[in-house]
Amino acid sequence: MREGGMNLALLLSGSGRTLDNFQRLIGEGRMASRIRVVIANSATALGLEKARRYGLPAFHGANNREINKIIADYPVDLVLLAGFLKLYDPPAHLRRSVLNIHPSLLPSFGGAGMYGMRVHRAVHARGVKVSGCTVHFANEVYDEGPIVVQRCVPLAAGDTPENIAAKVFAAECRAYPEAVNLVAERGVEFFWP
Image (tube, rainbow, N blue to C red):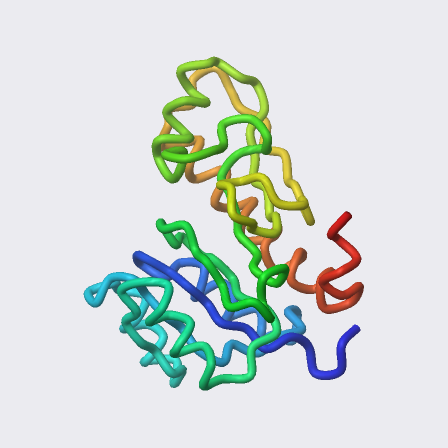
């Protein structure tokens, strides 16, 4: 494993639930990483308030240029997209170092416009028996980068999209930290063809 773990930049758009999970696991010594900076593309994102309460540098970056300017001021090995609802274009030195989590088992229910409850409603409408989450490296196409970790979630006949969302988020809370630890252990290039 990389000495001291990975230096992380966390990009978010909303409430920061994934940030809460990461902070807890880092504090417990179960995630080999350190969050160096949190950036939201929305100035009013609750995740920014949470980051500041955790004592983390937290900023609003409205677009890729602003986000990358902020990241340049911090030692960052890995950028984590945590409910970040824009296509992120990283600086050249981080091109292969952006992880994303998607609330389905890719390649199913992925692609442009497929995020959050839209995914869970589509899963419900299709009547699939298993859903889950996928942690993958992000590239220039939504949900097509190399897969690091997938977790399956069995679905029941009476599940609503909201039930599915809760089950999948519980799986995400295990899968994303597991993926970060794997990348810290094996290195970024291990996962790219």
